[in-house]
Length: 394
Image (cartoon, rainbow, N blue to C red):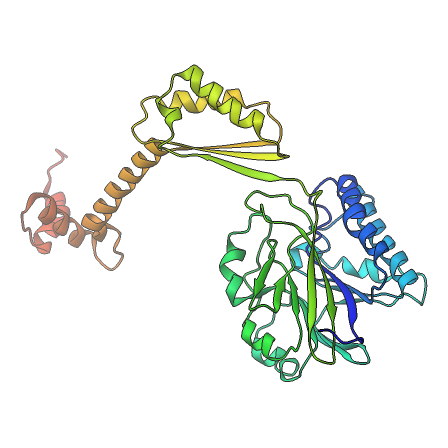
């Protein structure tokens, strides 16, 4: 049970202004986020855990216009509800030092708004201690964060990676992970935090050990992210560390689905007309915004090139459809060629050995190729002395 003294907050992350049509995105966020916040009877704080922007935006672009408009609406809500807003710096290539533009936006001293660029802690309220961990690139992680990791907090808000999601990050199509970004141990963060931890950067919502939440991106613009998109509502009591979370789903996010036709599909045993009808039925009956069709042609399929050309021509004018054709016959031939090359390199690799002389390489080649042993000194004789002895008829 939560005590009477509890705080209500909203945690967003990875908004990525600049990645999709800005007008459409704003209308989406207005209905899903802004209207939702307006209806909340209590809203003590709003946290944005990094990557508010997707790339460097021109100030006269539509993306910048709607990014600033959305933030302006958040300020209106914050003023009305006496809500504090904190935005954490995200990945360097996304936020691109543009958060400084937002710092000058509030025109009312009653709006409590801060941009967090470096690791810091704050008593957001008299009894609510928060650690902020933006994405920073430091040489000595233990030394840099040591002071902060020796305290206790009610909540932690950050952007970046913990060890459990490092592999997930490497597979994200919609996000880049900087090689110099630190990877934290979730156990260390959980040990210094009484309540929940909310992080940005991983675009698919994740829950680690019941208290560590990756919020996920607010919308969808890539394949492989069929999970829900949205943000977290959290109620937290500093008195006992208890909390309640609710994931608010963005039901207006575009749907990206993938259909895989594998090599053992009956399609590959059908006539060309039946194959076309089969594929058209799949594409035309999918009620999604974006479809990825992956076709794995079997190795023994007799007309792989013809089928590939036919499919590409069939769907060349289809919008919001991505077709990937894997010709396993071509891949098999490529693999066989690579294996032959590797065998030759293994057999005659000494040709590329810079520590050996030309005469040594030739001697070894003759021994391997013709099973004849010709000493290096004889090779030198044939190469150099015999050349000098040749009569050119002068």
